Length: 89
Image (tube, rainbow, N blue to C red; front, side, top):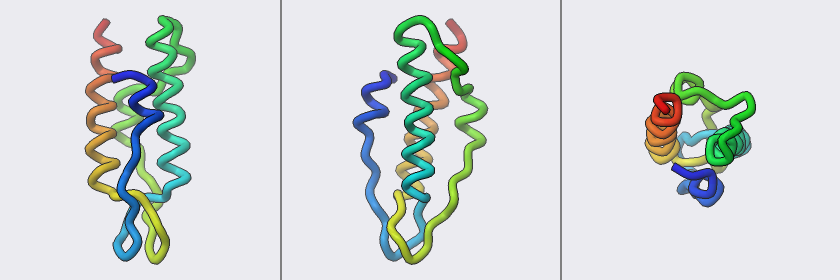
């Protein structure tokens, strides 16, 4: 997975069902992007670990727009795999 893929990732918004807080997800994606960019440049600085990504929890939204929880969770699962691959190198 490349940092650019994280930057380009979009999630379906939710309106009338529970979702994840968009600003929290976006901020965490920024940290993931920084971590992957560091690996791409062969100089990661304070990289996120696969365990940190797997353990992250976001504030749920109700009655306001959020990101689809399933889509976010599925994408984070992909990130965990990618970070484990970097850790194995």
